[in-house]
Length: 402
Image 1 (cartoon, helix red, strand yellow):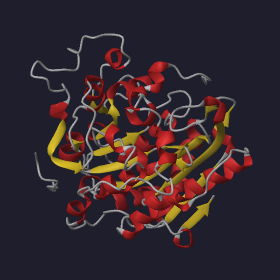
Image 2 (cartoon, rainbow, N blue to C red):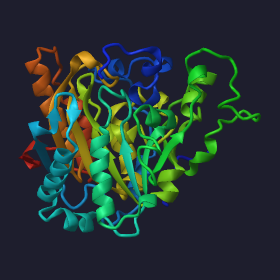
Image 3 (cartoon, rainbow, N blue to C red):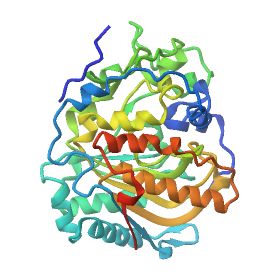
């Protein structure tokens, strides 16, 4: 066994069984309800916290654009009701919202703002959230606007990659080569949905003859998040999570190919917490995550982002709040979705999540949802501030509303 080290570098109301497999970035029915675990993790006497290799990540010196980026604690909120005409999203308005948000975030026009965050030779990964396609997933119009901004500033289309952990979720969300010609589209891993749903005992679609997962080669065995937590040995777990040991490896796409990352999560809850900027990467950039939910849950969203592969490459977060979901998360729950017509911009994902959390609490109260406002639900954000990864103290956050 390795030592725990680090080496640097049309709405639907019902959710069917297949959709449930997508909840919480592929946790699925096998592993239970992450929203419930979020509540359990905040009980007065939680179990002893497992050891992790966070200290190894923190020993690696920061790079010039490391988190929290050039604008720590600054969150820009852009709202525009013109963005929606009935059920149709108005692409031109989205482009305008993106331009206004970037300019207000950086203090310069959109072109100059690009130069503050990127270099011309960068390979840019756009991390989306395709879970709940058609209900609460990242809007294609927002992806369009970001790609147009990049290409207008000289980024070649072949140097842009839209990615998520599971490849099939991207196509389910309409992110295809036909929709985005010339743009790379990559999932960190494959998963046999039929086997995961218990419809077949034939594991050959995901299992190699030697017993390893067919996606194992897509993960970097030298760069990993280690936690002293055992994983399930059931084949269904291995199908979904690639490895069932104490290591959660980062995808090679992140460690070997991407030089910058744009994060486009969605505005939704996870129990009394949120599933926004940090969770989109914390649970979306590594494999073998199912074992982490019950003992660590939100802390994963802080510690995984402390690793240089994310800390030094994540330069922009655009929270897609064109629609919001105030309850039933992290899975898609159409009865609790609403038109919010808002985008948020930040280089600091922890400040962004703190603002998102506070706004979502307000919405949940307005909708008479019984909530728990215990500070433990945002402790992982304050943890990030102690680690120098972002700003979480509300009095230190500059929240600008346009």
